Image (cartoon, rainbow, N blue to C red; front, side):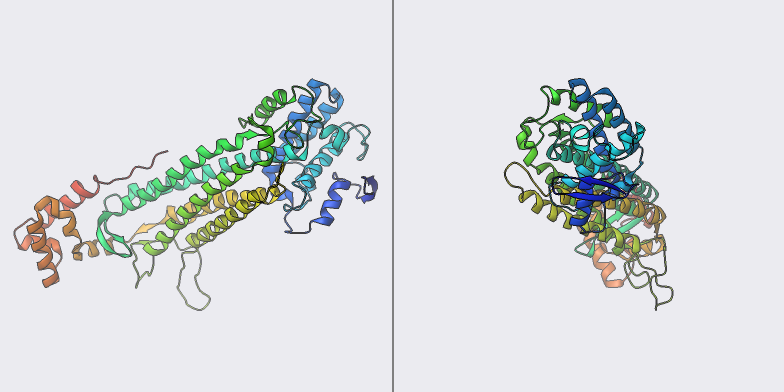
Length: 467
């Protein structure tokens, strides 16, 4: 065991722990969720980029020496590579505006840097968590900056999952482009369309959200790094911001830039509210699509039954043969969670006071869950549901043949009077409208099909999903 101290007193630290006294106190103080910062690997990587950029800037400006800077950078590289993430043992929800996470990072990096120098853990006279790893920084600029970079990484992950899901819907739209069906409004039969158009609309909805998400990602690139405690830059060398920000952009690959007003940027968490709102929008629309898939596949014998979802598991412990739409259902639940997370983020942002918002740990955890749960739900919806959807073409053909709603599509082609005559006769006789139209000498069944499919439905109103 080793002994470490802070101004409160002395703590005994396990000998193999890379964290120190500040982290030990945080573990005692915040036994909240059971989820540690180790569950947020993007945040750990983002902190490593922040600390490495700071070390390079501090070396250039004379705040630390070359030995310290190189060892700190080497330790940061280890974190970026995924090493020592298990040493981030502080709970994701914590008091102190993220100080415990920042100190957890400072202590792990300091002790790893000492190890690279061949020195034992705790030799803080050589590399100190505060004096060297945290030089020219405060939690109040290091934590928000790392959180924005981590969120940017999470956005990229979600965008890839959304793109793949959109591609699956586009493929089905092409596969189903010639299959006629009845469109519905307010759950009632409305007018004819193709199943391909229905799936192309799903793809277009997702494409629109991809654009919104890309547009909002830029909010994560405006950071307050260099503002230190409240945005004034106290304790940072002159010119530090101009050095550390470009270095952080170079190392992380995220095009970060300094906020125009560092004091405002230190207390204003509106960017997190904005991106959470976009995620809520995405969640609402993905949940709607999932609802539609469940409705379209309902039954299958006594329900709508337009499509068949792939059978993924037994649906009941008592009803043999029952299969439930479990993949859309899990997407629904993830979307409900994201909408709830948005409410938490909104309240946390509103609760900030004066020059700092103390509740960014909750915002960061909620954003992490929203981004990654959505991405995983999109993936399972894609591979375990959409890619295996099959059209009930025979049933759809029967319904189209029997549906009087088709006369609406014929109205501009043959005129209102003829269309009304077909509808009246079809309702009276119960015959399909194609048969009625042929009986009345208005058009043959083949001509009607050509008009409906080739000339009206597969061309008019087709929705192309943009990349």
